[in-house]
Length: 175
Image (cartoon, rainbow, N blue to C red; front, top):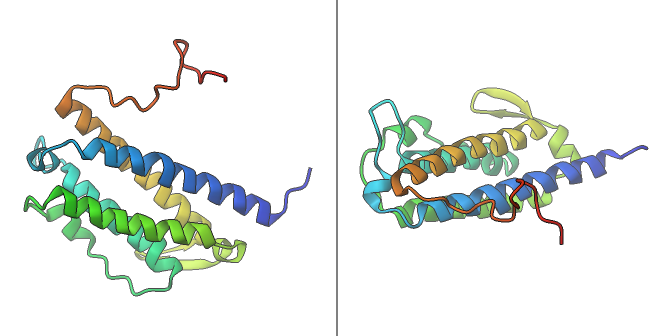
């Protein structure tokens, strides 16, 4: 069976959009929304990041690797600032900023071509293919999404119900 580059690109982009925009981002948002500002900026120790810092970091990463690179925009990211922020910025402002960046990322992922995925980009000092840039964002978002969920569960001591479709054996129930 032969699959064209366009078909493989469509499969890759479809899966990337689904994971990033339909799974990770909505779940992350639902984990953060019930938290207080103090909980969003809480950190267990100076070596750990708060949820607020992770949200700023995800915004910077998605904006740099997807939005700026594929839209050929100047890279204005200040990565160190994402981690040193200690003000208790309003949760709604930080989530709103990431929401706008995710909307821009959705537009990018909805229009990328095989040529753009195969092209070379300079991002954050790295030379990468467009495919690698998309993969980096999805993988990176998933990693920090997991940290945010873990912190939320530790703070709230409750199951967030993300896999309620699984039956008692841990498998998706068939309709």
